[in-house]
Image (cartoon, rainbow, N blue to C red; front, side, top):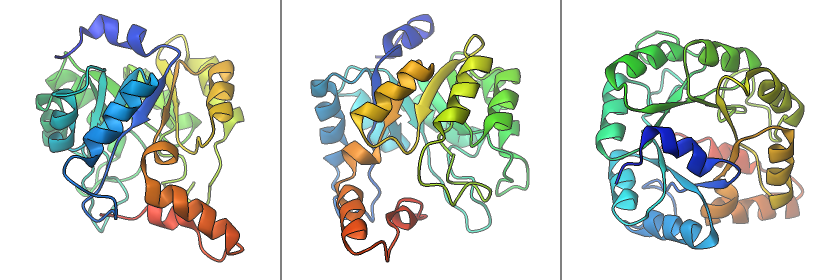
Length: 246
């Protein structure tokens, strides 16, 4: 079922959203692994799921009764924009059953040579019943997304753009500034670089309406690699694997 638009944010408020994603080249990949992730998240008390690709969104929605943030990762060699980069991708996410569509709303140029954020008003016009989650990388992009009418804003892409790719920790001070300045205009979600329950609670105190956690919960190969990289004296960087194109 798709939840009523006016109820979804109320259902997410103050809770944990678990990002349940698996790529075909992940060592833990199987057709039903992403569903097991989502069912485990629901059992644990998560208030929502974030999932990638029409197939995985549909599988989870058919079996897990939680609001769904949907996206569609599509990689091209000539751009770092990969989160639902086209209107057609957004339509496929919506048709698969997502309650919320996540878009790259950074200033990066897409495969077609346009700033990614230009897609936001197009999707709002073409899919008016959808809530739009603007994935941004900094304060200025968050401000622009709010001005364009994003329903939800989060620094999901902090650490994934050319200007921020050196980042490995959340910028909680900058996120608090976003919440202070935009929290009365958009639902603010903290996503990215949250690895402990304590950090998730910090984000709620700083003004987050909800928190998304992904790799720290659902990607066992990356969880293990964080340990092995540190044990080996930081000769490797597990974030390189996390950022890899699939």
